[in-house]
Image (cartoon, rainbow, N blue to C red):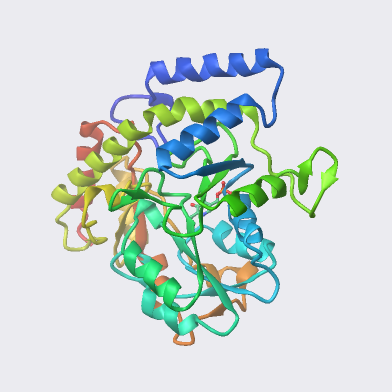
Length: 370
Ligand SMILES: *Cc1c(COP(=O)(O)O)cnc(C)c1O
């Protein structure tokens, strides 16, 4: 790939030391002869709990399962309503449905695309059990207010941290404000495996113990099934990959934040709106750098003509998807989510982008004439 060609994910440009460590780790696992739920998983759980400063980390199959298992571990299920955002990956809502609970969608704050607390309050009913807060695009904001809102209404706070590895609010990581946090390690996440993987972090011993049971067929000990669980075991190869990649996460996060700072400084085009800047750099790990614009198709074509690839997160709000037709939501509608979905564009923001490439993106954005 030539230096000027901008990749969407940048895996091919990763440092050779990281690649060598991944190959070495694969070999170590193959030679070990233990391939599911073994020492690599245990070591990764210890290391990721330390990284997030939580008491427990439970490796699972993927981020969707992390949400389902966290809910089931707390006994959230049929008859319970869980409020979440329509501006998120489908997995946030599918996790609620898979747990047997009923999702209710609240609107977003258009300045951040994160859940709007006022809309959440309108969605609260006598059946509401929990709020699933999504740290969308890598942002953690207003965590004190969310903790307070949930305490006031006696709701369980759960965090979808699939896009926010390493983000902190006043020094604390995602998953430590609520009862538990669900992480995804899908390859394109800020911390990614080379396949599917996920984890739950929590400071609650009961949630940790039940999640461990649920991920492995509901077994407390071998062939002792105390409930109907899932097969959502993390395998040794993925855990070993994650251990190697976790060592690079702080540096890669710093790189994402540097790229975002270049975008914030360089993008002044009046046709392009940026989301609100975080109060503190640690609150945003830029899984995505998202802008909004009125004529998205024209903007993306202009970027493509300037060799800048762009993605959309997400092209529709979830209530506009056929699979979620009829889903409950704020009685005042979800106008901000719909408007954001119709106008958002994700600029390239992976840690392997060079400054020259970031400047090329900025030039392309600045030359767009609306
Ligand atoms: C990726 C993602 C998930 C799901 O993770 P998988 O590992 O793909 O199941 C859940 N929520 C959000 C916000 C995500 O971005």
